[in-house]
Length: 210
Image 1: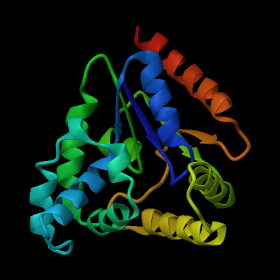
Image 2 (image 1 turned 45 degrees about the vertical axis):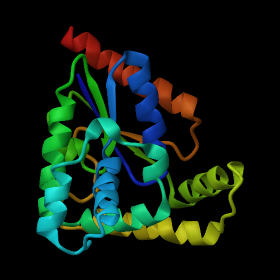
Image 3 (image 1 turned 135 degrees about the horizontal axis):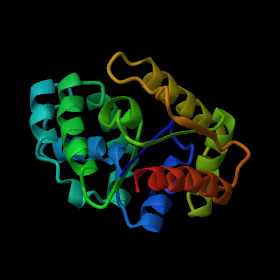
Image 4 (image 1 turned 180 degrees about the vertical axis):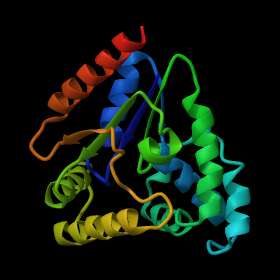
């Protein structure tokens, strides 16, 4: 069983993916962390971020079992990741690794930007989780403030819009819903309501595959 969850930044897909994986005893992979791990490895080694061949070589060495969300969430790593994520060779290398992960038994939940369209186009469950840019910026702002940080809502809002434009506008694997994906707009939904909706979709797929 492969569950593909796509959507823009701060729509809630990561939280949803982790909860689904935990509920069903499936493996979980936040594919965005694979790009961040590649970028961190380049930064740690003092290597350039604009050499596609070097970046591809590093991408092929990423250990998907050793992705530390806390470390990889740092802003500077995210900025570096956005530079290498547009490189076709890097994307190919990481997609290969993500596909291998998806074959794990008894099932896998992958979340990212191109899971249902590129990484696992044959996944029996595809969700596209979205929310308005205003709501997503507000969630990110509150998340930072709640953990004791300081944040500027307007700056976060502009950053969310920039990321959307970059993710949706790139020529290689743009962010878009798969044709057969279930659209889940969480703008006015609690995480519990979103989870229950997703769970009913997964349960239906499991019963069909039984």
